[in-house]
Length: 631
Image (cartoon, rainbow, N blue to C red; front, side, top):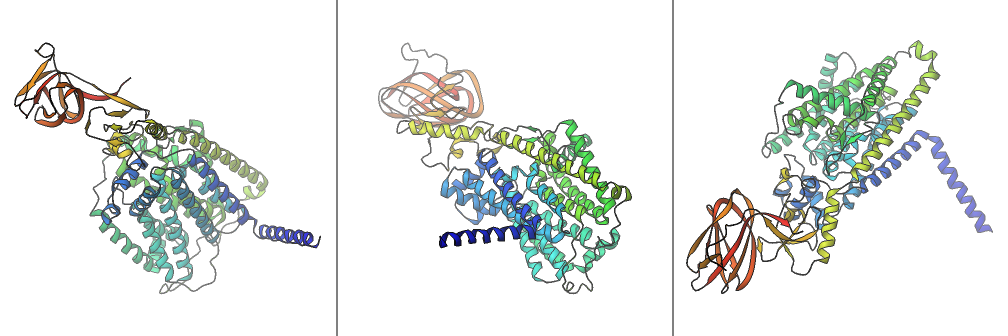
């Protein structure tokens, strides 16, 4: 009984400690609950999907490469991402073609981002229940769903977002304390982001803009000048990092700059990006998604939802600007960063085959969510008072407080405080419902993965295939890996990382092929065949040491083909096949056989030569065309 009483007492003490911890800081407690809920929900959503599009290419490159500086410093689609390539290489070598390790990594990255952002918020803005609003924007905005479900996006974007938060936090601590060690943290944060994604270079202007807008007071010109003068050590560090990275990147990259086709293309892009993606996405949208094959869906908000989100967003801006002086500077910061992002996207995405939908792709603005959440927090709560500490070395003064002297709330807001609070609660509730609906619908789209179905079917078929089954190499379906990713859209590349994967050969007597669903089937060649030969019962008779010409029923362009030769031979030998200016040697066996082989070339007449004397081959079956599975 004494033991039982002790246990009860211990449980009460523990409950009391937990209750006291929650009562001491309920905002912190609820913030932690939101973080846990967001991370768990997104992990579950991500697990419904699978590897997609660029993931297959990254894994194939990792499977075929040794871990060398050359591999790590190679650009992928003009992206510099050595740390991302390293992680993908390690996972590929350990588990091969698997998705779950990437889900765990993205979940861990999201948790780190959420915790570091929450800590930054509590340092940057005044305490209050409204602090949960910017935290919820970061945690639940549908604009960041790709970064927590699609590895090729998450491995770039999550480290960049973390770098943004760490760099801003380091600069904030340097401004408030003047300790030079925070400059080291500032530079390290930017370097960390750049190791995963060259777009992390935008962290540099972000830190400058945030300092000028939020940490230094005065008119715009004076604020910029004081930002440069007071905190020049920060800019020296960031300039050194930027120049070093630029020197490395520019020596390896090709120009990604494009010219838009017209002013209409630019205006359409801007309307899509701001009107259909950013503003609705920050307020719980887009509510509706448009599928994009195996990749993540793009935004397609209903017209009413788009205009309602704009109305709410403008009302938020106006209300916060009237309540807090610093709110206007926060919105200027968000606008300035958004202009940087739009300029970068406009210069690299417009004028391409994807420009018509470039503004609807959420991953292009995932980093904007971090800045928007910070700005919303500052606009709602104002800046926190800095802790006591000495000014920056050589700064000659303390940081200004742009939030000082806030005017009292307008009389109309004061008189109707209860009504205003009710409206805010309704708006927040509606935004939460919108985010939940948008996230659930994204999950439904993300769960449909043609690549997973293709891979799982192929695995089952390979397990049931007889020993010695070999395959001719063909592209995987275009909605799994697009043709633009060639040669990594080939099946031989796709299956490289698979343990006990299929064996691909350039030629075989009875090869197999994967159909569009991943099923294994014998090969047939569809295309023009040679016209019937003159020898009755033989067709074309090829005698050793001689060449026979056989006209095709239709010419073939110079392209990648598969050739099937059915023949009857008097002995084992080799034969030389020629079409146009290209030739290919293949083995011949005694008796009635066939042989399939890959061939690149074109023409209207086939030539067959038997180099060995004393051998006779009859054939009337030579087809040059496209390999297809037998029905």
